[in-house]
Amino acid sequence: MKILLVSVNASYMHTNIAVRDLKNYADRYFENKIEKPQITFAEYTINQPLSEVLREIAFSEADWVLISTYIWNAEYVSKLLPEIKKVLPGCVLGAGGPEYSYGAEKYLSAISALDFIVSGEGELTFVDMIEKSEFDSSGILSKLKEIKGIYYRNSNGHIEYSGSRELIKNLDDIPFPYPEILNGEADPDHKIYYYESSRGCPFGCSYCLSSIDKRVRFKSLERTCNELQLFLDNNIKLVKFVDRTYNLDEERYIGIWDYILKHHNGKTMFHFEIEAEYLSKKALDFLQKVPEGVMQFEMGVQSANKKTLKAINRSTNTEGLAEKIKLIPRTIHQHLDLIAGLPYEDLESFGHSYDFVMNLRPDALQLGFLKVLNGTTMEKYARENGWKWMDSPVYETFSTPYLTFKDMAFLKDMEIITDSFWNKGNFLHLMNYVFRKMSPWNFFCRLLDYGRSIKAFAQARKDLYWFQLIHDFINSQADFLSSCGLNLILMNDLLRYDFIKTGKKGNFPSWYKHNYDRAKHRQLLENDSQLKDARTGFAVTEYEEFDYDVRTERPEENQGHTEFIVKYDIVN
Image (cartoon, rainbow, N blue to C red; front, side):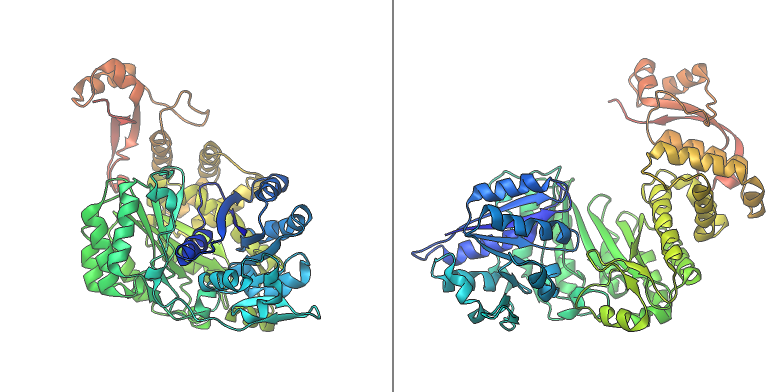
């Protein structure tokens, strides 16, 4: 019996841990049995033509095809499933994953080609299905009601649920998900490898599917460290822990960090989702030892409005959260999240939340939008209280009693502004100065209004465009910016410095005032002992003059003619 597990990922660089876990768990379960299924998995992306994916699935000649679903691929999968039945008419067709699990009745009603949906954790259900099929590929359809954790159609065509299944008690029973790493066939620089060391979440955030199951289970510390060593040995560039809240068991999570620090290869970055408020003093003390390039933290703030936080079942201790985040060393990349569309949060309130996060100076602020997911507490609350959202995935909020559709559109543009002028890091010197003088929210709102006036958000833009836009903004809004206490000469200096820091330029744009002196450039190169010679130095440096020392932490306090070279590479 041939079984094909299919994943449709958001991009080529992503890997799907679910299909790997199902295959590896079943392979181990059946390895000593007389009859064994032939299980393979295939990964595609939502950017591939449907016909291309369909062709490969058809050529597999699989008896069963099971597809992993999420909100980002649900629309694609819903189009794909009926076509699979046309090219493989005898196959048994199933789906699983959070999107179809929590919308099982909707999808089974809409897609007649779909035979069943696996609900929740799938490994035990998968092997049970294979065993009860007795290796008769189509015989399983008459036995679905005997298998816990399945949504299916009964003989009358009505949708039924076979009942809940017990969860895997010991996560060490699940094999390491990446055979390509074990076989030395990994793609260390172009793939993100996701890793799971725990399942479940004890918290009850109303908008999150993880809040439905609060039973937390862990892989053992020894097993986890042994598997992390495989990533390190293979020089994997980025490993993302998918644990919903990583820092739950102090001894265990610090133990993992300690292992990573002691065995680090100088390349691999480990990503963790952290509930910063619950970091212990011992954990914070440990983190002071972590060098740059080893860890990055994603921390959900979501809102600074205490009434909002209470309504979504999150801690209201924003002061404690801020203090903990400030104690995390800057050697650890910090990614903070906000969600637009939550209860009691209008534009004014959201602006306060935005400033709360930006004043912590995260390396990135992700401005997300509430997705009203099937099965969450938020879904019921939203239906009863006037939320409007997309009926199809990704279920993003259109409006709330506190935010109009126009408000949400404004925040969509604010997301672009935030990403372009903060998250990408191209304007850090300018923005750090501006944000010492005025509210980040107020500044970006003014910049957003200017951007709208010239239709800046009408299409995708390259980084060079945003430099031109903010240059024009600074010089067209001189009176307003001056009234806010900003020095326009310094702002233009910092903008030019940020621009030349982004890389060696062949040509300078028309807005850029390049104060170049070749003789002084040569002299500075000759004075630099790190450079082989001046000829080579010209190729890897740029010379510039400023009215302020823009390299200092507070350039506004260091006025005076300054000239120096910016190095793009050091020639040994």
